[in-house]
Image (cartoon, rainbow, N blue to C red):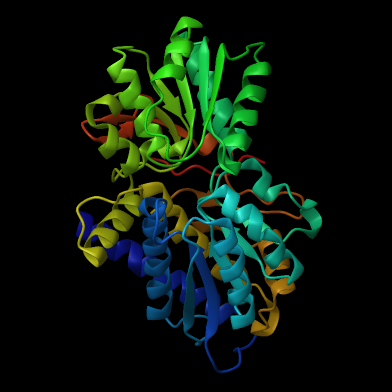
Length: 404
């Protein structure tokens, strides 16, 4: 069944891209089109940087297999930011010097924030498939901004999770946030989401990356009467929270944004991760033809039975197609940064993606492609992430569209 789905989806993709190519007004000049890719491919954040990279590469290979961009092969220019802001800035400048027409990149909010002005000042569109910190697409006024995103910003993830906590009666919230740009922005988003429902956290803990024991702040959270722990960090620290909580024999749930679906948490915390809840845009279950085809193709291409962070892979894959669909709208194949920006903001052809159906994903005033209706609650069960609610699994049979 999966092979059939994969063949059907690949054939539909080829016909779609060929159709767009034929509809273009003229052939572009000879030579490769350079597309940048930047992310953490080594270091602590590589567990979601590498799935993003593989999703991007898979899309590039598919596009080149059906003729590339107006007969021109798309070349991926890859840079590793190591999850470090200073390195991210340096390699971003390298990409611009390489002459990339656009870039897909960033998994870490702090790294992205240090690099955004490189793309903005050089008028090179950046499409962010992983970093979710709300400030990423808020740094520049939307009409002038070259920064686009197809991951779910924390300003919608936090309220989504808070609403679920209220439904479950978990309203005495302890927030554990790291001191990175991601943790800082996430903390503000959670507090704002709670304030909108007339709630305040009963306890807030801050910690640096690399912390190995959080027993003492967890004791304080327990004494404050918390009945749920809301964590905001991207690395092993999520597992540190779970393991410290287990050591205290404190049986309260751990909830958060999408990093609770990462191997650092699930493999690091083992049974202490069981039952954790998090916001997700994509869960690696073949709930429809598009997702079945994507999962089968990824598994075959990379010889894996499981994608470590499926959201990163799927969003990276969709990001490439969003850029290519926009590029096919550029008159005469003259793919300058401003032309691609205008195409992304315009009435581009609908892309039937893996994560969502992208019908007018961006506008001049809106640089975020994902809206809250695309989110589902995931839960750790048996060492993997699945749907927290059966109704979400049924709803996931139909790929969601952006709510404008």
